[in-house]
Image (cartoon, rainbow, N blue to C red; front, side, top):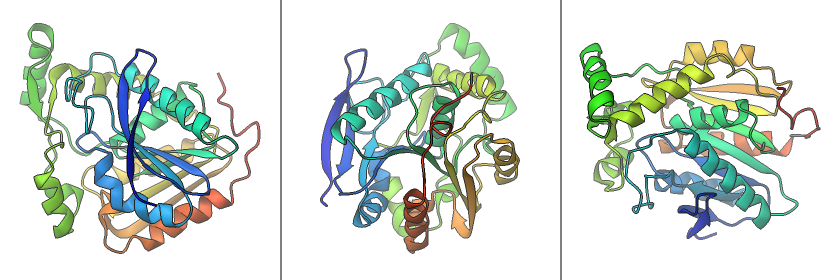
Length: 285
């Protein structure tokens, strides 16, 4: 099905953009990474759509097609969680009777885990691709010291995101694409970086408290997230329905690979075999 564009309204009255691929089967709502936007995953979404899924790729507030918002800036990360919850409500209303899975890609995975662990309205399952729960990349110590000072006196000053293009992928076609993407976020405000740290700190003690079905897909050659720590986190997950798969030859952005069929089929098979129960759909307090 051809990609279409739309908007949904948030609780504070904002209209946020999404990309949609209509299908006859279950629904996947996905959240993108910190630099990217939903458009980065259009080819991947199109392939999933061929397997019957309806997909919604939401652009995070201040990213992608949401040009009216201050780009790369946020004063409270919980607003992002509110936006996900509002998007899920919108998607369920549009797809009555269908299962809705939340997919988080890279930093979108961190948001998705935070969203679930904090007891928000749950989807029917959680799919995580290279989730940035534990990072290898960070600002250096000098920049961190400067950022702390700037947060007090000029919180909207911008810092470059410390990720180099080759960390995303080795695929020349996609490297060329992201270099030319005018909607890509290359900088964030100081207070956005502070909110990332705050979210990680607040999540560290509860990130295992997830009780719905979880699928985690990791790239074997990932320079951005720490796969070893993610495996340790996965063991602590309290979900009784969880699965992890490492694609050994792939790099961080799994959807940027030329041969994506094994990943598409793995996600499809996993969603088809989910048997939801009340205990899977609840999060303990």
